[in-house]
Amino acid sequence: MKKPTRKQQKGYAVLCSVLVVVLLIMVFLPRMQHTHESSNHSQLKAVVERKTENGERKMESGKRRAESGERRSDNKPQGGVYRTSNRTNFSSRTSRKTDDFVIELNSADTAELRCLYGIGPVFAKRIVQYRNLLGGFFCKEQLLEVYGMDEDRYAGIVGHIVIDTTLVKKLAVNELSITELKRHPYLDFYQAKAIVDYRKNGKHYGSFDDLRMVDLIDDETVTKLKGYIQFN
Image 1 (cartoon, rainbow, N blue to C red):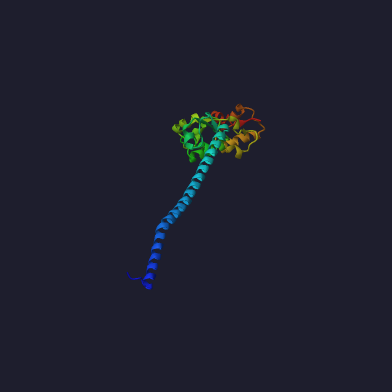
Image 2 (image 1 turned 135 degrees about the vertical axis):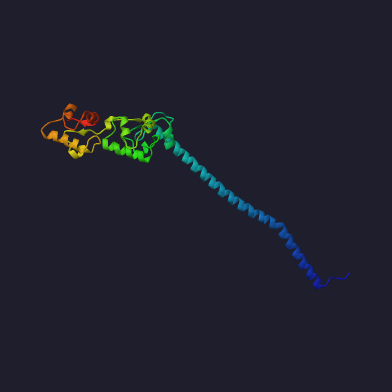
C-alpha cells in the first residue's frame, strides 16, 4: 500500500475538519434553538401572568367599590327617593321601575322622576316645571293636570309617590302683586287684579270667606287655592 501523498493528507485533514464541524452543528444547534424557544416562552408566559394579575386586581377593586356603593346607598336615602326595603337595588333605572320604592314628589329631580314607570325625560321635565309653577304639589291628583298625563299613566305611578305638603310654597295673598299672583296656574290676570283691587280699598284677607267676596273668585277657584293661600 502506497503512502498517501502530502496533497492527499491535506485533503483528509480538511474532510475531517468539515465532518467535525458538521457533527458539532448537529449536536449543539437543537439545544440552542430549544434554549431560545424556552426563553421566548418564558417571556410570553411572564407577560400573560402580569396581565392576568392586573386584570384580577382591577376586578377585585371594582367589586369592592360596588359593594361599598351598595352599603352607602342602603344606609342613606338620596334626594326624593325613599327606600321601603333593604334588599332593593337602586343601581339602575330598570330595577327602580320594578322594585318597591317611593318618591317624594316635591323634592325629586328629573332623574328620580324617570324611575317611575312610564315617565321618560319629557314627562319628568313637565312635572318639575308644573311643580315650580304651583309652588309644589298639594295632592297626588294634581299630576293629572300635567300636560299629556292620562289616567293609565297616573295609575301606574300613584302607588310609588308621596307628598310632603310642608314643602309647598304659599301665596301671601295680602302682599303679592298682580304679576306675582297671576303666575300661579290657578289664577289668571283678571282674577289676580281683582284680588289686588280688593286690597286697595283698605280691606285685608283673613279667611277664605273674605276671598270669596272678590269678584271673579268662585268656589271652584277657592277650593283649588286652599293648599296655597297664606293669610298674614
